[in-house]
Image 1 (tube, rainbow, N blue to C red):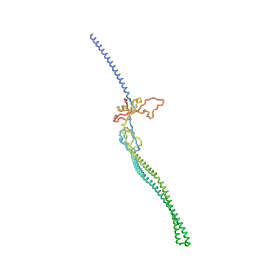
Image 2: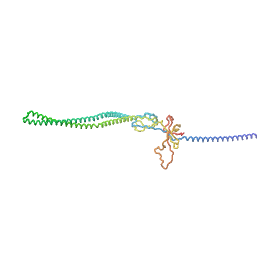
Image 3: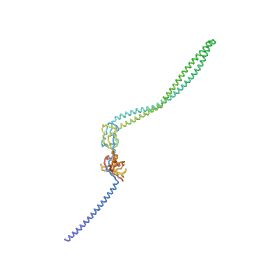
Length: 413
């Protein structure tokens, strides 16, 4: 019995010793595990801190895109609207969206065509008139100059005839004087009966004939003087004709000016025709880009004015991200760096690149930029809108929409 008790005491002591050694080993193992965890935590934290220095993130970002406003270029009444034109509907570029009543503009086009035909005829007529006026005006000048030369020759001829008549008058006066002396002498002789009466009659006849010749010569001289005066008057008339014909260059210039004016009216008529054609074409309104329709405000039968907005088309194939980074985050940021975009709507990541950095802080582009000239200045970290462009084929289904919120992370490595 005593041996049995002793054996139990020994076994209990051995068990106690074994349990205390096991606890010590467990505590040492726990310490090593905790130490390993601490080292791993420190290493992980260090690695995270070192790695985070290569990234800058912001949740102040959103998707942006163009909002193409479709407006009327001419006034008119909406006569047709494509049934596909409704809010949130996709349309392709070149799709006929609506049409205005074209009848007024068709009438203006016909009027412009008629004006063009009239201006074309006037321009052709004025162009043909120029050489005609040129030939006629200069022909009159040359004819008047030739007529003046003929009149001058006529004056010279008549003056020569006048001189000849004056010479003949002096000759006939001499003959008449001699005949008259003979008659007087013969008259004295016939009274003395020294000659016959017939001899006296012959001398008297000669005297009378000589006197008549003198009278005829004087009349001829008067006629020649009148012809000389008429010839000189004709010269004066020819001078007047020449002076009148000397405006030939001005007539030609005037004709050419009329031709140029007609040509100008022709060009104006062509421009009016082109304008009428454009106005008629503007009655049909087409989609300028592929996109989704939004903010449609036009209805059938509505009267619209030039510049009036009718609807908005949002192109989905030309979007970008505007990420507002703090100014302290821009130190190492450069265009071309990779970026990761996480869209809140879909909870997935998209790849892109920094496209450009802004020229100024965002508040400076506001309607009322901040003024820090007062004494109550408080330093505020400014944000700069950085543009990020998605890589190709990142959004093949065009699920992204302008206005969606997202987180942008730029990789500096």
